[in-house]
Length: 149
Image (cartoon, rainbow, N blue to C red; front, side, top):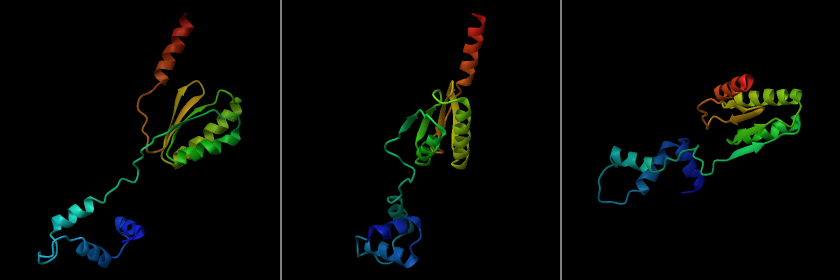
């Protein structure tokens, strides 16, 4: 059986007759009379289940754009299911706002999330990465401490 046929049967697009033929061919014992039991079919199908979103190498990209033109490259990393730490300290404030607006739209479209992790530093993640916790409270405490001292 070809790779394409296996893929089609995995997705359930292949016709029923072809699936039945595959099950009959894969039976090791010809002495058994009648179709294989429901449990035997279930076990055969469970062995072929592979997670689509499993990634062996998870990458986090560190990006320090110099202009708004580089925002699309960051969005491409997000579309490839990679988390991106964006440091906007080297661009003007108006450019930084445009980049954040563009990335916010990209993240919304991908059902991802964005979180501020420092002064002009943001963590952008696709939907496969979950962000827990908050750093903003720590930053607020530090700024209150600095005002008093």
